[in-house]
Amino acid sequence: MMEPNLPPAINPVNPQKERTGFTRVWHAFGYSLAGLRAGWAETAFRQECIAAVVLVPMSFWLGRNWVEVALLAGSVMLLMVVELLNTAVETAIDRVGPEWHDLSKRAKDMGSAAVLLSLLVCAGIWLTALGQRFL
Image 1 (spheres, rainbow, N blue to C red):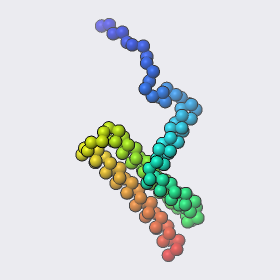
Image 2 (image 1 turned 45 degrees about the vertical axis):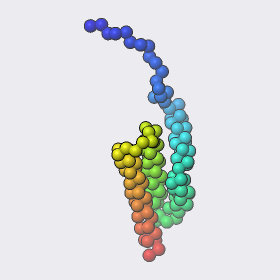
Image 3 (image 1 turned 90 degrees about the horizontal axis):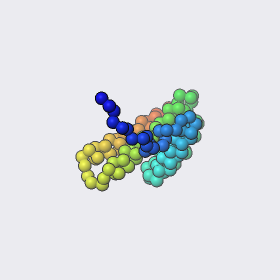
């Protein structure tokens, strides 16, 4: 059997896939900064960033060892990561279409639940650390 004539290689849709080494890392860093700028447009992420400006430095004061500091600061960062992922899910679903759909609602609700759970973990860690320190 003869193979059909294949068309010449075309440019990939995403040029990032063709990059290697430092160039790839540099461009990925730029995409990450763009993602943070996009996240800043969301009220909830902005509020969490402002809280992080206070809480992350405070974790070095409140934590008695590196593990406590890591848990306190890490729980704040985890909340911000989950918020960005939730926003990404919501944005992707909104791109598909504005009409209401059970699966779209379900995905958005799960993203919201993930934010709630990470917020509860963060609050629990901070309240426990504060209780141990002052009670």
